Amino acid sequence: MKRLVAAAAALLLALSAFAADYTPTSTWPYIYPDFCDGDIYTTKGTKLPQKVNIHCAHSRLHFIDNGIIKEAAPADILMVVIGEDKYIAQDGGMYKVVAEDGTNLVLCARLGDFGALNETGGAYGSSSASSATTKLSSFELEGQVNQNHMLILQSRDEGAELTLKTTYYLKTPKAFIKATAKEVQDYIGDGRKAEWKAWNKSHKVKWTSPQSLLSLFEIL
Image (cartoon, rainbow, N blue to C red):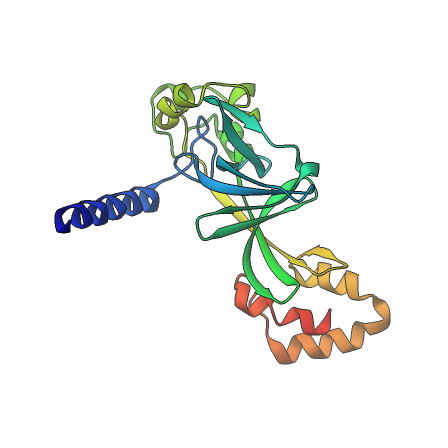
């Protein structure tokens, strides 16, 4: 039994190290290094265990169906839970919950900078000689829906490395806005402009810190 526990612990450590070193590529544009066990919660009130991943071109939910990669219809999804990560469906994409206060949520989207790859022809962060000399194909840009999962997985390291850009959002039961000073001011409106200016000056929000962003719900 001790040997089994030790072996399991070693496997978990190896997987954690692999995930920590993982970088999405143009041929594997996913948030996770492989499809993971997850629970999909639908708008019909059902819970569906699936092998899932988040595509980082449009932040869409993909899952495995009989070995084939499929894309979930955004309108049918409420939430997906992948390990300790929780994603909320919003405006056609999946947004990770990074901080919460009751029904108020700080969300984030991590999207691949495909535009930069096309501008450079895939030269930066390239993991293969061929990817450095050609622009991204429509296949790489649009994803791997309806393709064989294992075949796509085998090509994971053949593409150019993707830089992920993180954007934060604020979600209340009535609002969904980008977490920037301008977006918050626009939402609050000119009638409360002086109040917002004074509040913002006194609170010194750190716009890249989810915990700091929670304070914005006071003014919202």
